[in-house]
Image 1 (tube, rainbow, N blue to C red):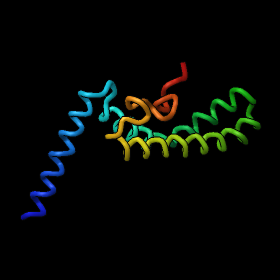
Image 2 (tube, helix red, strand yellow; image 1 turned 180 degrees about the horizontal axis):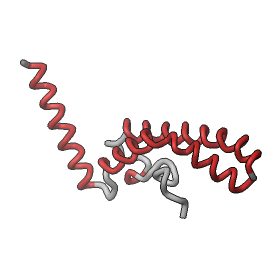
Image 3 (cartoon, rainbow, N blue to C red; image 1 turned 60 degrees about the vertical axis):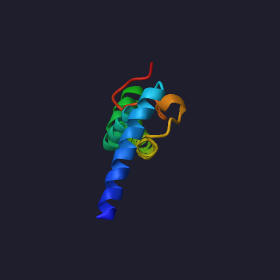
Image 4 (cartoon, rainbow, N blue to C red; image 1 turned 180 degrees about the vertical axis):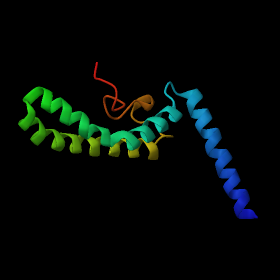
Amino acid sequence: MARKLLILFLIIYWTLLVIDRGLVYAGDPIQKLGRGITNVATGWIEIPKEIGKSVEKSGDFAGLAVGPLKGIAKAIGRTAAGFYEIVTFLIPLPRRYEPVIEPAYVFETKN
């Protein structure tokens, strides 16, 4: 029974902490958590995206040779950034919960 009460207390504590952090800081920890989950789930999309970019830029053969390698590297980076944001979603780092990778999502384009 004590264990269940402790778990309930921790859930309530973390929920209130998330709500409080969202009100105090300009950023939003829930948005950071969502961005992290999205990047973990969609990180693999970097591979076909980079293949398409490389084929368009360098032609078929060069694009198909270089694109997958660039895509795998970017997919690993985006997925790792997603895991980082999930684990640290309550901590306002980088400043004010800004994205750790640009663009913040695989489907966005850089401005």
